[in-house]
Every structure is written in C-alpha cells, then in structure tokens.
Length: 501
Image (cartoon, rainbow, N blue to C red; front, side):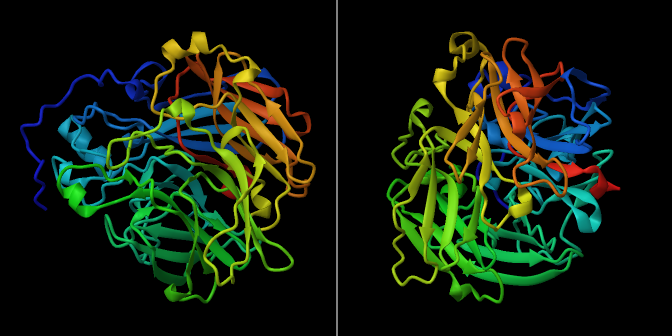
C-alpha cells in the first residue's frame, strides 16, 4: 500500500500536544495495574456481584498528528469488580496490532483517525479497540470493539488480550459494530458492520449469532450514502439503522484528509430491515430532516404494527471536530440533544418519516435501559443530562476541564408512563460519564436496580464510581474513590458474576 504521506522522516514527538483533548483532566492516563479494596463512602449493595467493564481511548504515545481527536487513542480497559460489599480495580490496554507495533517502535505509527494513507507503516488490522467492551458468552471472553474492524478477545479476569475475534471464521465482512445487541429471551446476538467492504464503501452487512456462537443469517445491503452508522436498534421483527450525516470519501482519504465530513444537506436516514429471513433488497431507507442521531435507547412494536424508536437527536454536528466541506462546525456549547420518539409504519409506502415527538427537552445523551426488555416496550430509561441550573461550579471546573469530549453534570431517570423525570446531581465540581444499569435481581421489576457511573471530580482531579439505587434516585448509595484520574471513556457494560462462573 503506497501512502502518499507515509515517511520514515516524520519526527516522533516526546510530549503530548498542548491541545484541550490532551490537557488537564483529559491528559492521557497511560496506566496499567490494579488496586484492591477501593475506598468506599457509604455502602455497596450486596446485590451487586459482578464486574463493571469500561473502555477509554488512551494513547500510549504522543501522536505525530498534532490535532489528533480524542477518539484516536488506544483502548484501555477498566474493570471494577464488585463482591461482598468491596470493589477491586484493574486496568490494562488491549494488545492490538497497533499497540504492539508501536511499543516495539517506541513511538506512534498511526496517522489520522481512520485514514490508513497517513500511517507510517502498513497495518493488517488498524483497530484501536477503544469504543466498547462487552461479554461474549460462547467463548466466555470479553470483546473489545471499534466499529472499523473485528473485535479483540480478552480474558474477563486477567484482562489479557487473547487475539482477534473472527467468530471461528464466520465473520463475513471487515467491520463489526461497537454496539451489538443481545436478545434477552434467546441470547441471540444481533450485529452489523458498515463500510463493510472497506473504507468509503456504502455496504452494510447485517448478521445475527445464536447463543452457541453460530451465525444464523447474513444479509448484505447498500446504504444511500457511505456514512457513519454508530448505533442501531432492534424490535421483535425489525432492525433499524440510523445514519449520521458524516460521510466518507476514499479520494479525500488518499489525499490525506479526514475520514469524516459533516454534510448539512443530507437527510437523516433510518434503514428498516426485517430482522429474520430478509434479503438486502428488503431494506427501506426512511428519511427525516438533517439531524445527528445519538445513541439509541430502544425500539419496539405497537399492537397495530408501528415501530416506536427513542433516541437523542440534535440539528447540529455533535462531532464538531469534523466540520463540513466549508470548514464550518458548531460551537460545542450550542449543541443540545433532545430526547425524541419516532413512531411510524415500517410498511408505509411513503419514506418520509413523521416528525418525532419530543419526550424531554433537556440536553441528554448515553441512554440506557434495563436490557432484560430490549426490543420490547420500555417504561424506564436512564441517561446523562446537562442542566446548568443544578449548581455546577463551572468557574472552578473550566480551568482544569480539558476538552474534545461531551459534558454532562447529572443523571436522569425518565418514567415513560408518567413523564416524571428524576435527577441525580453528583456535586458542584463533578461531571458524569456513561451510566450502566444493573437489575436488583433476575426477578426484579423493570428499572428496579442500580446505576453505576464513573464520575470526574475536578476538585480532587480524580475519578469516582457513584452507585445509585433507582428506588432512591436523588442520592448516592455509595461513592467509590479511585484516587486515580481516568479520562473520558466511551462505553461499558456490567457482567454478572454468575455469567462468569
């Protein structure tokens, strides 16, 4: 592969750039190790017996791309083991091909985000494995995922990297989503890959995997444009693919440009495909006005066959560091995602979606549900909120904030039946990352359990875990002090101890 920008004469930086995404709380951590019996304020509920895994982009070497985005760091996995009221911590990098070769070279070798033509060497698999981490029951391993490549397998106890996962040779395409879904009744894993035939291709490959690891179907389809499909949703009978209006172009990549470019004229497409027995030609690409769809909450079907689909939505480019063709990007302080609900007939002849209903006007993202009701009607959801009226001391936080990542100062719990919003505010010098939900027990009612969230404490410049009981949402049941700073992460999941046994 001849990369026009590849040169062995590119100097190796010894310090991280003086950019917001590498400064203050966002300074790369570059830490591997463990700490037993973390300090706990309050009481860890005895029902919590399992491990909270999360991943953050955390570059082991300074990039030679000066304004490298936060998203381009190496995947560093944190594991918080809850047992008998105690919490133990372990952290380890995913040993990707990139990580190993850069450690051997003692410098960064990868170039721009998802642009292989700017690398110093050729990689077989260019993954940073830095977007999500989840459990894969057929192999009893973790999957460290980034949506431009196959996942890496890791030992859930030691966090040792076990190698690339091609699902015993069954993976049909070059990419695997960072947001696979698991059917709570059958254990079936529903997944897909976009840019499935390589960078800049409009091909999407949808597949589902039986609980024993066997691929039970593979469907190839073509999207209206080569663009980002970060998250998706499933119902009992349908799969939904919301396309973010960030487009990819191979010629731009070869010229050393960015992988993504915002297109303000592109509609929001939502592809709808029958979940089982479909062909690629069966997909319907519904349209809505230009907007950025956030992480999906859930989707389900009404008795009359309509699809209900909840998610955050904004009319601005959330990934503002990738502007449009004219270099125009929004001020991040003006980006505001409302909580919306699309309801539509998947068999309708018109491909124009009805306007979504706003179910919450507050700025929110990273929604989670009780995964036991995935693809069914949900009545509770949990998410990050930004509400400046809560009393956050922005004057104290801003000088040490760092940048390049979203900011949320509270957690929200929405009862979708009553419309009642509960808010957990962690403190005046705190920001929250993505929460996870853990049921109180297998037989607990939907939404009855605990939220666990990693919290940035800008007063102590360290990280904390806050544990919130959903029956008393406005106060923390326990605060676990890590006494270590973990920069902003992306996603994570809970794995119950009985599933690891």
